Image (cartoon, rainbow, N blue to C red):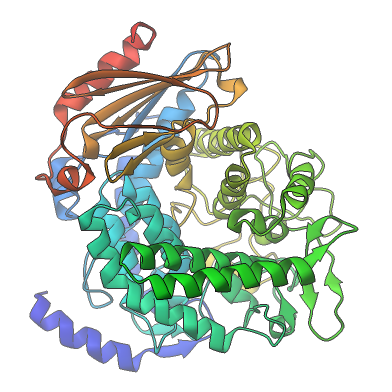
Length: 572
């Protein structure tokens, strides 16, 4: 359908959509059942249910159909133990799910957008915020589209929870789009600054909308409904089957404080890049004040943990959930408070499970392997890891990153699917359920984790690239800050990044050094660093802007170099 026809249809649907508190309606899913079926056919073709090899490169026509200009990043891990091929196949499977869920412009959006999974036929706020960084190192133009699609559906200042063909939610979701925008385009290049300039006004207005509509007189923020938090059936404020909901409008929440501080920090940084010093100062002041109020009202010194708090009774909702750890991400705790939270995190009876960082502490009475009642969700687990890095708990950050990625990749190896959430105790989903007792959810979404889900489960690939291998882009070139844990000693992480025409090999030595080799068209560079140490470098006269502006093409030369490194990493 031509763009001339799509534009008036989009305008019409924007005014006719049914506004609902549900995430989506069955009618919307029914409308797209044919596309859902095609997505499943494509998924089966790419991955199958057998032990067939996972494609690391995709047919050029498939990439062209989705206007993706590069082959995906490729990972190869070698070394002891020998049964680590699941890293390679799991990494490739995430890429396949990412491509599967990328949607072309249609009546919903004038730009490409991302479904979290084929079962979720809409544009979701916080899912998109987590999907964009996964695309960042594959094709940054896709990351831009994914974020733009959400911004362009803003409703009178509010970024919407979800918008589908015929329905839209009356709620919002965790305000993480500004954070995601800075993750993807905060490198300072002229191209990135223009992207920031285009989206900044809507994100600034959204911040003010939240202050006007979700802030309590105490200075804390509250969720209009548990669905806004994204943590639907958490024991913080719902029964397992959602037959009972607490009135979250009467509860101050540490996760909301976290998101608002992160949003303010990100808007401050964007404002600085855009030369808006006055705006930056206001966002900085807001973040400082909210940090102070969160520590004053939501930190329990007896438990040394952050809890939700009832506004009227002033009582804590004393359940140790992942929300109580998220303030680390926004730098809310003092250093002593952060160390106290670290003790909870590394406790095997609480959050240091086989697949780490369950959504409810493993020893809580309310723990259950049902969605947000206990299983591991990759977005909140990643958020805690980012908090560990912020406080320079390097060994813990490296260990949890490695084990989280290993858990997702091993589960894929066993089940041949990328899932919505994961079992903290094993590499499978047999014991997991989805809002057990909720017949509507069972009918529309099934009783197990949704499959082909990349809404945030794909963040494991981002963790590999930016945190374990430690690669990133800055205005002058590139940056390395590898975080390989001790259990990876002897393993070589070989990464091919066609968008940058680079291949990278990283390995932790027995002397606790991390050795990194970067190969490009101009040759080989060798680096060594300690855990958490940052190295900045440039390979030639091309900065990130020049790299991004190059004609999109598949990097066959880098592919050859990567193959050589994978086979001969010990000689590099």
